[in-house]
Length: 591
Image (cartoon, rainbow, N blue to C red; front, top):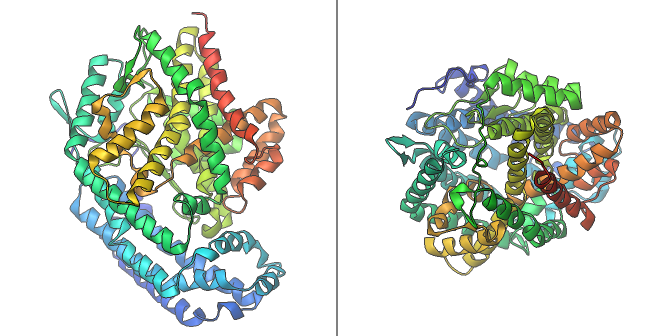
């Protein structure tokens, strides 16, 4: 294992458990098991007959059990994310997952019975002042009612998940973490090789791109098998539940209508020529070429230098940016730095990329990044801190109503990025503005256009998988077709690019997740436009209220105070115009 960079923060998870052998883990698991057994005996078969007082007692006990489950799950998943190559840690993570699968299977009766309760009983519960706070939870839960299977089948699906879909996700994670990518005289992790695709040295970018492709090519059979199994598993379950479209179950989870997602995809797809096609044509000219190789897509512009940004400087930039919007946002973000809730060093075995783990309301979120000092790393840190702030603000709703649907989960993260970007742009000398604008446009294109390209790949792949299993080459053909349109004719997607579908974790972890990025970015673009045009103090208060709502409101309810609606075509076009406006700003720069 490579040496940890001790100048960067690393998680200390001992506030949960001292290590994976902490005796408290077994004690807590036993307590959770006893609580769930008591809950089963007391309430199974009786939910439809509960009075408001018993309903309140029942659902609060259920939430407490779930909170305790997720707390141990936080420890096991986070310790695994920072060392996926340790066999003992992997076994610990798996055993915790097995325990919870069994417990959650025994508790599935509660949500199944709850979703079947008649409207009259629900109304009676909601007339009680103490119980009516649960109305949003019941509303979302009961939307799944038409798609529920027999209770025994639901129990079996949960029990088999640890050896089914979850096992394939684990195989993907462990395989990805174990890959080593040759680079000159070194063997690099996935995070390190991906980072080199934005290296200033063109030779380094080419070597990194070729290495990434070569290693994925050697492993494409296992990655194709994982995708095929995940897809078939999803189709069988969704088909039995009665979902009509292959994306419909994800849209239901996201509390968003099929037609809203279709409108987003259509708007972005039609705008590709004035987005990616336009930008990469401009960028190719900057390099004196008619086309860029795919490994140069995120390259820094020529004749520019990017100074490495120290961790403490990144912290100050972000906190100052957040404070300029509202002090509360900055104060919450500062907690992550003060209390060691961030793991930032790059090391082998650690998960690549970045995430903010919401943990549980009684604890706090944790953030994982792989910080290497680039402007993009600062933006990524701001992005994840936005998530963390959002999760802390929403925690007051309790575990069952804190989580925001995926379509709105990116709101605070992308807005946080925009605050940091504008601060950096305003304070930069003219020669650096060009690189900053180009970098921001690229990030937005990666978030909107590229993610819709990913979504189109998933749709075509899953549709084809209904008929039969796809070979790695057939998957690559779909990948090349959809991505060629997404990036446009000024990017050379040669054969080396055809296997890059293999490293995208969202395709495995959460099929059809990716459109949520485009949804969130477009939503933030519309919010940012509203922010610029409104009373900023009043806007920031409404914004904090929106984040604090967690999962208690739909996208329509949350956007209404800002006079925005995702049902209107102008909403999505506003998001597109924000990106094209930045392109105009870039092209008009006089150096």
